[in-house]
Amino acid sequence: MGKVGFGLAVSCAAATCAIAAILVGKRVRSRRKWRRVVGVLRDLEEACETSVGRLRQVVDAMAVEMHAGLASEGGSKLKMLLTFVDKLPNGSERGKYYALDLGGTNFRVLQIQLGGKTSSILSCDVERQPIPQDLMTSTSEDLFDFIASSLKQFVEREAQNSEFSPVKRRELGFTFSFPVKQTSVSSGILIKWTKRFSVKDMVGKDVSECLQHAMTRNGLDMRVAVLVNDTVGTLALGHYNDPDTVAAVIIGTGTNACYLERTDAIIKCQGLLTTSGGMVVNMEWGNFWSSHLPRTSYDIDLDGDSPNPNDQGFEKMISGMYLGDIVRRVILRMSQESDIFGPVSSRLSMPFILSTPSMADMHADESPELMEVARILKEDLQIPDVPLKVRKLVVKVCDVVTRRAARLAAAGIVGILKKIGRDGSGGVASGRSRGSDGKMRRTVVAMDGSLYTRYTMFKEYLHEALCEILGEEVAQYVILKVTEDGSGIGAALLAASHSSHSSSSSSSSSSSSSSVVDSQRLP
Ligand code: ADP
Ligand code: MG
Image (cartoon, rainbow, N blue to C red; front, side, top):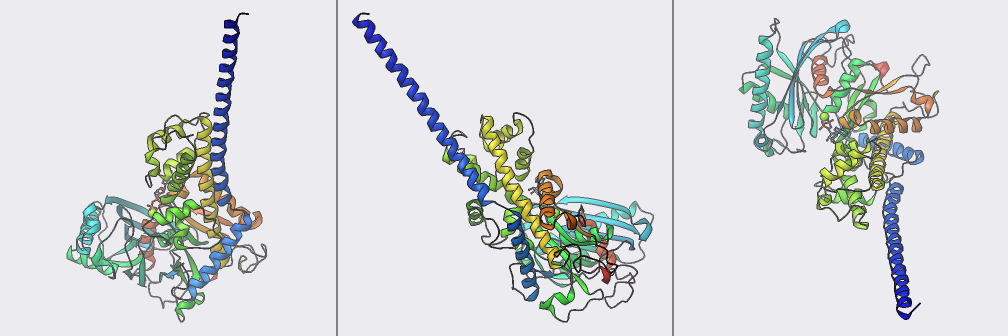
């Protein structure tokens, strides 16, 4: 071989070595990046840990906070608001009743015809209407005139199509899902607006009075028989369908729960008397907090960026408004740690750009190539062309966030059951879990909210955790029943059970035939 040939061979070998070194280096770097991203996932999993031991601590904390909230005003982050609802519909109600459901972008009016024990709900007509944006921030008169005139038109249309003519004054259940300090079953003062409402002159005013005056102004003769929130409506409908229903839980955009409490346990209102010996308590459980809740740096950031820091801590880990945003924050961290998602998409820094339904769709993607995950990453977050293993990682993040939410919600439910002695602690033989005949009692919880009703994995994780915490034997007596539209129908049913026409309407009435909570069923 001549000198030239030798030189060529040496250069070729050197080039090959250099290329190999670059390739190896690249592979090492890419492995290192992948390890960093997997590290983010591992840290998330660890911080979201919800072993059954930890869930039991959350159960205990919930029961303790419930006691504290019932003991004194401001005694706990749980407000434990009195509702003055001391009787729940039981199926014997008769007649025609109305409901008005205000709490979101739409408001609903409905009318039901009740046929008593055997026939139950004979008919139900519902009408939905959006609230014009400008009315959400105008005056109480403008807002309630709009609502009352829509209600009047509904009543007139429905009267045209019906052969019944009302002989008695019409009665209405008003579901108003904002924080209210209740002063009686049919009246309450607005504490503050939430969501997108901000009708300043209404804060501190009686909500029913505002509606009642607007109805009078609009020439509609109707009485507000009850003022409730959506969880109480859900409990009412649940109890109407199944008298073993003792609590209601809503997990949708936000989350809340209410349950039937013994009046003697409501220490902050000593001397409170009800015929039934019970009252529905609105927990406002979205604001629950405990050091046992598994909190991550993402939760801390989300809370800090929110308009209500240090408020609604439980809700921020559980409900539909937030889950998608927690996942977005994790993907942003991963994307900043390495370039496995390509250059950091500016979309990832936009709060709430990833909705919970989109997150649920990614979680549920069972296609071999995870095409739905690819589509949502591309369309919602402007992250195109990520490899399959990265898409799998995204599904895992959704799983961790949803599993924690569902398991914490389950712990919250068992907390309620523990407070009312229905968690079977001490085994199935324990005190109030058994009826007077010594048989184990069924305990039904009415459930609503789209996160629970439409997100299959969420529901499955919740049920699984409920079984783990309670144990199989007790869990078979605890039934979670989907109870949709309680916020509308339930309010109309409560108007019926609190009707001034009904024999059981007076709280001093001893008649128990129609709707007084059966005292034997009290927890
Ligand atoms: P609201 O709580 O506003 O009265 P819903 O109970 O219908 O109404 O809950 C709506 C919330 O539920 C949405 O904000 C969304 O976060 C969540 N959601 C709706 N559909 C789904 C779905 N298919 N999967 C997961 N979450 C959903
Ligand atoms: Mg709702």
